[in-house]
Length: 281
Image (spheres, one colour):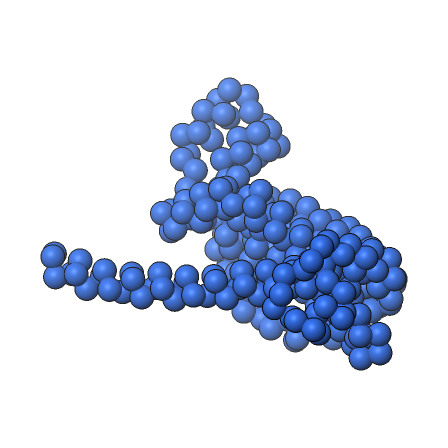
C-alpha cells in the first residue's frame, strides 16, 4: 500500500503542475484581452503588455453599437435560452420515461437515442436544411432554436438517465400511495432530486450552444439573425479595414460575460453534480 501511495503522489504532483500552468496561461490571456479592451489603438500598439492608464470605455460603446454586438448578443440570449428550456424539458421527461417505466422498446429506444450522439453534425446539415426549408424556418430564430434543442437532447438524455435511475423506488412508491399523480410525481418529486444533473446539463449545453458556429452559419446567416459567434467572426474580418482592435477586445469580453456568470453562479452546484454523477456511475 505504501508503494502504491508513493507512486500516486508524483503523478498527482505532475497533474497539478500541468493544470496550474494551463490555468495561468488561460487567465493570463483573458487578463491581457481585458486590459487591452480599455486601451486606445495607439496604446495597444505602443506597449501591448502595459496596463491601461484609465478605463477607456469608448471601446465597449463602439462594440455594443457600431459593431452591432447588441444585436448579436440579444439573438444569442433568445436562441440559446429558448433552446435550453426546450432541451431540458424534453430530455428530462424522456429520461424519466426511459428509466422509471418497464416496456419492451425501452432499452432499444434508449440505445438509439444515445447512439445518435456519435452521429457527426455535418451529416445532418443537408436533411435538416431540407426539413427546415419545407417548414419555412430557414433564417428564423425558431428554426435555429429547434435545431439546437434537438441536437443537444441525446447528450442531455444520456446524463439525466443516470440520475433518474439512482432515485430509490421507495420514494416513488410512497408518493404514489399518497395520491401523487404522474405530473406531480415528475415535477415535484423527481425534478428536485435530479437538480444536480439538470445543472450539469445546463452548463455544458449553454457553453456549447453559446459558442456554436456551424449550425448558426447554415440556418441563420442573415445579418439581423447572427448569433454572437457569427458576429465575432464578422468583426474579425472587418478588422482588416477598420483596425479597431480595442473594440474587438471589448467585444470578446462581452461574449465571455454570460459564460463567466453561469460558471460563477452555478460552480458549487456543478461540482456537486459532477461528483454525484461520478459516484452514481
